[in-house]
Length: 323
Image (cartoon, rainbow, N blue to C red):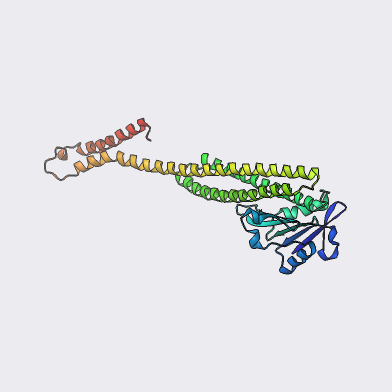
């Protein structure tokens, strides 16, 4: 599918590619294009459309390069990022020799819906392909910032659940810790994906700054601001990643403490019942001569001795703070 946008009254308007003059088009957005659509765009703008395999290459030289006067920039962007499992995929931005922006993608990041809606209602200065690209990258950065802010709030809630559990029963706390471990794992996966995306965005903004020599002063200033924003978001993701690592260690530590407390209780109970068991074993022996066998107070004496032998270890453990 191909969407073309032209500038009319300082606003972006969606137009049919074949019904307008090529010079009036500032942005062509290609979503999972067919081979015929790719050939059409190549013929119109004199560029080579990269394959999906080329877009997924991890080498910088395969993602950021200039060829025949066109500049190719590929970044990994999230789509459907309202949950913890966003759909990640490469998006290629091509600045054609004529100055038109051509974008190629196989998934639907929300920025590609947000910018056309905004630019249709307000004048955003999308006078050429580079201006559209800057606006698009700014929307993408804002979207990444929103995702990170949401992830940061959810990580804070995870921290409260670990260090201030609402459940008092150990069995329920163990179940909560298992749920927390799964949530921490999902957050770590989300943050690692965002780190990869911001890394590609950092490289893209640096490349764009290098090839934008003919841009105006305002465009260069916006690119520098964009680079700083992306760098700050990258630093923020590093902090969140470290926080997640700390929460994972803390959760495993809390689980170990809970398990140790249970084992300690069993150990103390076993030690407390050892002396009564010894007393009961002594009076359970089958010998003919046992003075207490014919003593009227022998039975309550044995019971009292067992209770006393249990209370003394309990009092000692309590005094030492082991219980």
